[in-house]
Length: 210
Image (cartoon, rainbow, N blue to C red):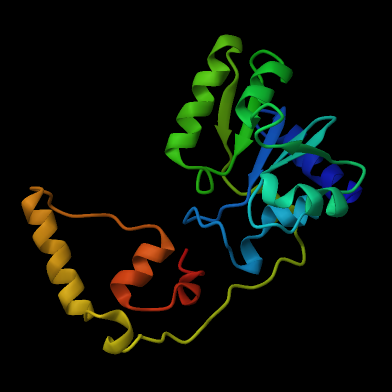
C-alpha cells in the first residue's frame, strides 16, 4: 500500500493545479455500490474490500470512511498507512476535509464517480476556507493500477415473462405514458438497476456499460 500511496501522491503533486487531497469513492460511473472488479478503485488503493466506503488520500495522510457493517473488517484489512473513520462516530468526510485541509486546498475527484448532489454538498462545506473540488481529466487511480482487470464481456440474457411480469414493450409503453402525464419529453436512466429493469436483464450483466 505504501508504494501505491506514493505513486498517487506523485501524480497529485504533478497535477495542474497540484492536489492537496484525492477522493477515491466506492462507486462506479453509475453510482453502483456493488461494482465490477475493474471499478474497485477504493479497494485497490486501501486494501479494504467492503462494498461501501470512501478513501481520502492527502499529502501526508490516508483515511477510509465506512459504515457500521464494516468496522471490524476494515480494522483487519487496512494497513498501518490508513486510519479508519467510523461513519456516525467520526466527522463526515466533507466536514473533516473542511476542517483539516488548508485554505484554498484543491481536492481532486473523478467527476464520473461523484454525484452532482454530493459535489454540491461538499462545496458548501468548503466555502468558508475557499477550498475547491478539482475535476481530474483522468482517474488517477487508473494511472497507477497497472494490473487493472479488463472490462467484462458477458452475453445478454433476457428474463422470460414469467419472471418479469411485463414485456419490455409494455414497460416502455407504461413509462412513456407516465412521461406524457408529467409533460416530460424524455428520461435519462443511468443506474444499472433501472437500466436492467427496462431491458428485463439481470443487473450483473450491465456492470460494464460505461
